[in-house]
Length: 202
Ligand code: 5GP
Image 1: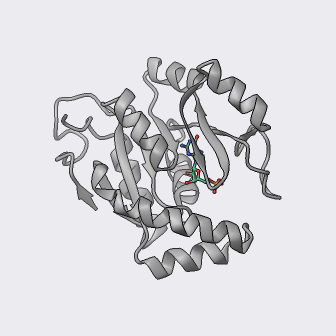
Image 2: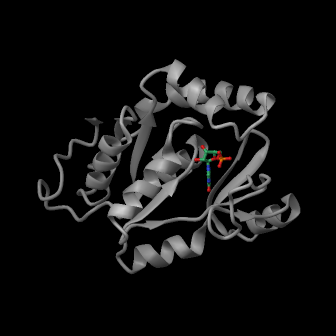
C-alpha cells in the first residue's frame, strides 16, 4: 500500500479519524467484495447504499444493494439536492443519498462510500477531510479477466466499462492511498486499518 496522506496508522497522529472513506477504482477491480469484507470484520463501519438507474442484476435487492429508480425519479432527486454526489457512468446515473451519510457522520460513525471517479472528485471538493482510497488491479489483464469473468454485463457494456477504466487508472494520483487488490484478505485488512486511521493532512 502507498499512502500519500503520510499517515502511519491509528495512534500515529493526534488528529481524529477521517470518518468518511471513499473507495474508488475501475469497474471489476473488486470494490464491492472488499467493502463487504471490511463490513464483516467492522460492523461499526456504515456502508452507504447508492441510488442508480441501472437495471438490477439477478442477485440484487432494492434497498439493499442499491435503490433502483427510473431516470425521471433520479433526476427529480438531483434537482431536490438529495445526493451528496452523483455521476453518469456507462449510460446510467449513480448517486449517494445525502441524508443517511450526514446523519451517520454527525453521530460519529465511520462511513464508507463505494463510488466511481467523478463522484470521488465531488466528495474531495465538498468534503476535503474525507480519505480517498484507490483500489487498483494487479494488472490490466487481471481487470479485464475479472470484468468478463463475472458474467454480469453484455460485451458492449464491458467494453464501455473497460474504456472508462483506463481513465480511472490514470487518476490514481488524485487519491490519498492506493491499495493493490492482489489478495482480498490483505486488501481488506489495509482498508480496515484506514477507516479508523487519522484524517489525511491537507
Ligand atoms: P455497478 O453498475 O457495477 O454496480 O457500478 C458501476 C460503477 O458505479 C462502480 O464503479 C461503482 O463503484 C459506481 N457507483 C456505485 N454507486 C455509486 C454512487 O453512488 N455514486 C457514484 N459516483 N458512483 C457509484
